[in-house]
Image (cartoon, rainbow, N blue to C red; front, side, top):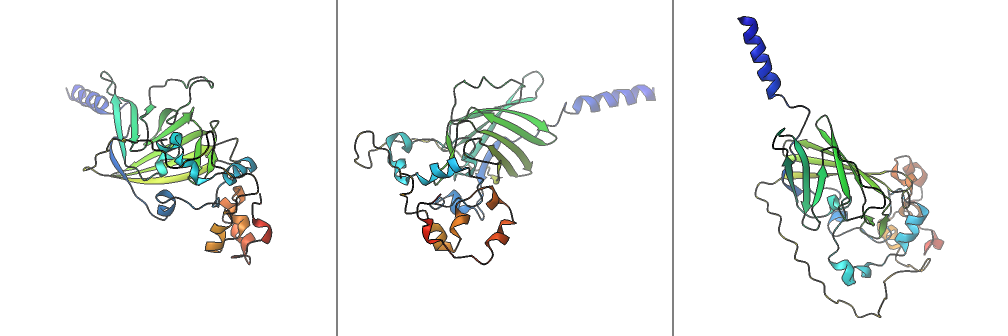
Length: 288
């Protein structure tokens, strides 16, 4: 009799246990800004590429960028893409899909104020072929690594790594690690871009659960802000952008450091800069 009782009790414990780890990320999440507030809200300064593993192609593209491009009608309501939206000032809503039979979470949906709905599939489906349609949200699949949800994102439209013209190509892929600790959500993003970056670019962002939050609609309207000739796109030709030195001069950062590159990502780079803080070479204007 005791054996049967223990067997029955053991079966109940087995039935109550999840088949594998699943953490519920659904809810209303509010971004929290710390030392990166200046970059994420008002935006970074022109020419600030410090700490970015930029390739020569990415640097040249960033140097040619002009902020006036955002006055073009096709840019005014453009949403942030899946890799950058984590860094924006928008609140986040995460909802879940649950299989009615197994009751396992089969997908999450992430939606910010300035984004489109982004489904993240946990049902094992494959990614579409390379030539399939790209979007701002991309195509996301995920798996569980213990209590961490790891995503793989492909098929992203061209976007940006930093909101001062630093580009991210449509060939890039994104890996994310979603980590929940109570009412806190930390997401680590890893961008691999064979065109504009020479190494993976890693960032982490924190959100806090906000039970009173409501994500509003995004009723964006396009207006004609500037009169310009038909087909004119704001830009700087190579070597003509005279604003690239201002960031380093304002904060006493050597011009070479502001140009980014994988070397500037690591602490050892400070040794190279020792003794030259505040100095900018006279040939810096428009240099590569």
